[in-house]
Length: 276
Image (tube, rainbow, N blue to C red):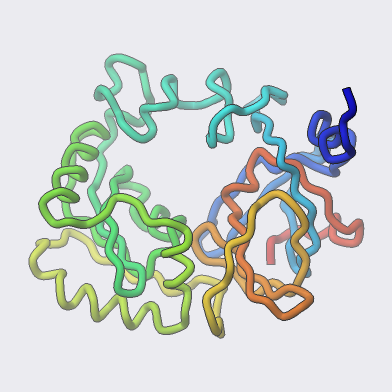
């Protein structure tokens, strides 16, 4: 059977790409994207400034202590065998307090929070120790704890109840988030929370204003992860890196969706140590 060049590349991406993207995280307000170099196994940070990157369609498990080549069938970066959650589905809908699946975080104290993105609200839950970190991961302008609970299961139930009773969504699309990236988003968020905040009896309020993304004019177009990305990097917020391509178009790349994919970049970038 005839197979074209793109199909051959995706069948064995290790033969055509420089590295495997294994993690994306924020360290305070510094985004860090890490890769495992295919030829040596070395793990290092990726530079994206200037941006010159080709991303695979294929996705493979990022592994753990050992390298894993399992092809992924869902949007998770790990296969079931390598995931730190004994039951992957429990990340989103916990079934117990850690007594059924031995999940290490299921019995930890959790908070239900409200995040504010410009004038938009979203409700979520996270471990109590990760409130600020969670807000930065999501690219929120403000994050406010509105309830504390003894387990992940109890927090998820409270989150769902709050979402139903107040009409606040539990998710935000990337398209909606990209509309909240303007320089005035923080002022809008403060005004929005000043209006609605008193009705929530907040436990903790945090303003998040250190993202490396300033001077943005217009709304970037979110690009498919797979393919070529080249241009001048303007910064990042949440899971989006914003860049201006060679034709002057404003675009955004989903950094979280790069994890588990394979990439190739210009050789001159390989020695760089930071994302920006």
